[in-house]
Length: 263
Image (cartoon, rainbow, N blue to C red; front, side):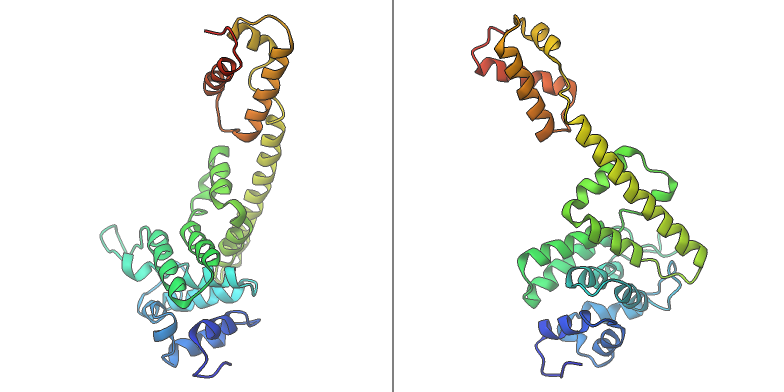
């Protein structure tokens, strides 16, 4: 364990990168050192956690952090994923709720990590993981393909870390609930991979073929038609979210730039 004189940034790193950070995190709070390192942590002790059945949110937070791999980005995200709960607690909706605590926690994490002197990219990535940490809720009720694509798109390069955080956020002692959550995440990851492959294949075909190009632009067969189809294919690859009407509009603009006679 680092000494009392260890700088806050270094101390937190040493605790979080231990194989099991549990003892170090409890020491951080119980020794009072958290007040200068992550002062938001002690407040979690006062917050009951009706969902995860821990005596408080701090116990749940430490359990989640200990379940993640000893990598700084995921350990920090786990440590901060519920940090916004005390600020968002409400009893107005039937029992205690913490609405939008992820968004609030994301801002709190960004501020605290920046003050601790962490690298700007790490601060941005951790705060984004905290913001996205609740997105998986509701998946078991049924997500459309669009919802799955949106989850993957919003996570971007953090998708693997986000899924690890979601898996680790299950600290129930009920083995059936644990197994169900893991199955759901397994299924989500398979759907993401399948949809990515589907989108890749779709991107290999433009939404508008050569015959339609000639009809839309009142154009005779020739090299310009081939160039238009190739341009449409590149457009499809770079902007797969464009629909047919948007693609036609862009095609007309492209044709006008080529000196086409299209109206």
